[in-house]
Image (cartoon, rainbow, N blue to C red):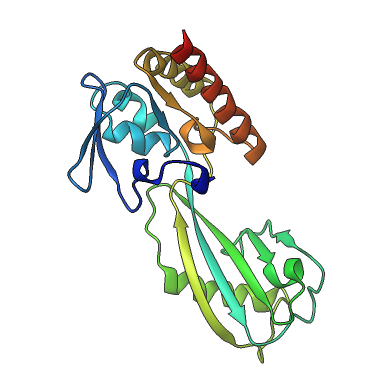
Length: 220
């Protein structure tokens, strides 16, 4: 996709620090001021609204969600118990994690490699070292690893937001806000831009719908 567009129009490693609705421009972390006719947002709606100058700030606190710590852990040998599973949910309050996925089973490699998901309320602090310790203990208790299994390496990602919470009253406020923003040429889309729960296919359909809408507007 990147090879088919004008690379001079793409800014990498650049943050949008402010969206000025009335002036129809954005400010970036590189100090640039970029004017727009139409703006398409795919960033999380709560973060986008925090940067926007006017509409939407009033509903930021209404946007409920959780955040997730994802631990990626590599071990020095295979699991004796889980040899075929791609991912498993663990609905137990005695464990700090709720899901573990097995990269090695998906890819057909030998040593155990997993991703571990640990959920938090949106404002909770995250102690990665403590959660890693709890995770390894939980993996022993569930038979994923044993006392002779050693960690080779690990990395982590904090998804913030991770899963948005859908509620009727908030949905109505978001719907009204999107109508107001679209009147100003601002379109928010994608799983987090729309603040919804969806598949990748949904996002692709929405992107095409926006492109068609803007192309029709341009041709008019």
